[in-house]
Length: 166
Ligand code: NI
View 1 (cartoon, rainbow, N blue to C red):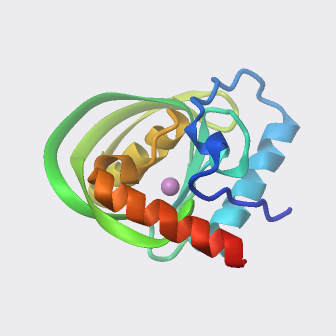
View 2 (view 1 turned 90 degrees about the vertical axis):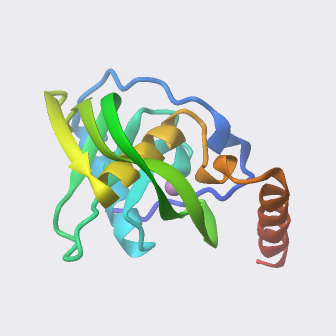
View 3 (view 1 turned 30 degrees about the vertical axis):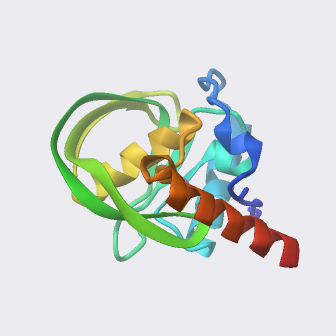
């Protein structure tokens, strides 16, 4: 396994809409393992493939406290949503910054697993929030897009400064 480099905002690769996954092979399984390792090491609750520079509709997640409930989402689609609420959110590509975002508290999802088998899932709370966040990534969106232009500008300056001094 290997740790992958996580891209930071405002890297333009985070803004590309990722392409559907069509090949289910050993290379994909290795990539998924590497993404989990990278996510756990960060540490984070989710990681989308375009955060590590790959234009693929693939994300890994683990919303459990014990860090032992792996979820792989490939070509995910939200079927229905319910109950909007404000939730605290952060992102490995926007390090050390957190803010409140409106998310659905419940959703019903359709996706493929690591072997290309379709499955459906009903998610609540943190898991539902994480799924919306990861699907946004796959569409080239970041949670800070929901914040005011002034806040976004401040965040961009802060991250550019951090990158310059790294
Ligand atoms: Ni993120």
